[in-house]
Image (cartoon, rainbow, N blue to C red):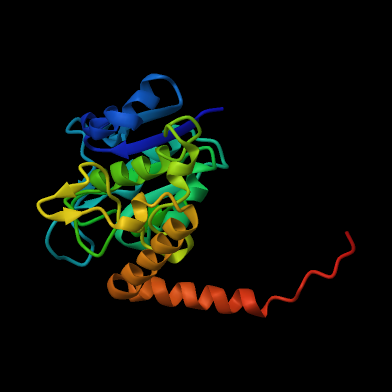
Length: 244
């Protein structure tokens, strides 16, 4: 069974969008993964195809109706083991570890909100997991959904040229990725660090580790703290005394 993303949106023409290009696009065309964009309006029941209404209690904007969205989710008829996600600025921040888990599964159903959001009752009734891609607000969930899908697709078997490409990069082991260099040997008076052209693989590995740690400490103290905490937990684990 191939990995599948099912997207519920008011703008299905936004898909595949950028997912139709580069590695994700080639993989989509070759059948390594599948994408289905479903129009929420198809579940509207009135002649105007209304999907929203004014917020209960007053306030600006409009809210997606629980009954229409619930019908759209049910009509997608996804398998019970597929995650049901709602892209939302108030959701749990998306992490690389979560992406790895999603990529290893059958693929999610992703609801893209619009306007002031969606009725809380459908979030609870359909057990939607709210996911955020950052502390900012977008016009809708489509761009966030594209980002989440791209992050997952690149990890699928056969999508990236080298399996190691996805193993040694930012957020692996709570570290940002080390700086990368390539030809020319010198650019505007800036040479490639000598260690990277030394041919000494041990020195290269040590340099990359040190650079990754320095970048993480300065740019993402939260990640560095998580790395330190993880190391302490590892040190406290009892040694395996099981007979081999």
